[in-house]
Image 1: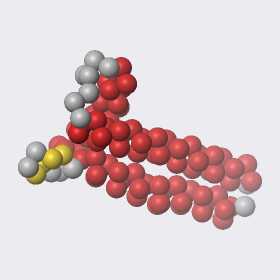
Image 2: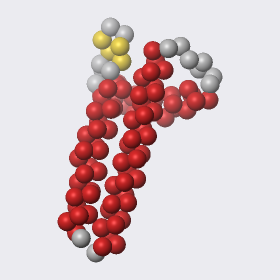
Image 3: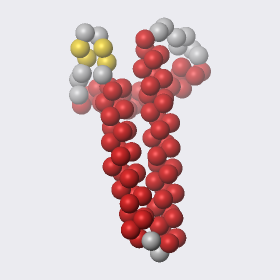
Image 4: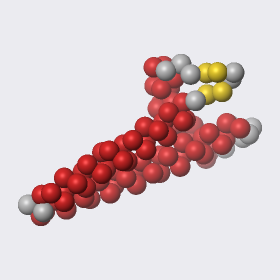
Length: 99
């Protein structure tokens, strides 16, 4: 059973890092919205292409535009924090209980 336990820990670790990187990209997208970046810059296009599908789903379900401010990055960051605290911690706890 220790192999399955190690597998769960590895999955939880990878999931944690993926969520962390996506949080950094989300923060970068929010900061880019405050300035006027070159829309043809490859980094700006990458950040936009990675985050826009998630932001679009949030905007579609929760239309939260107040005074021209978009609150979808805040919702995405809160969802990421929830997933890190609940899902990743649950996977690690399950792996520890199996050992």
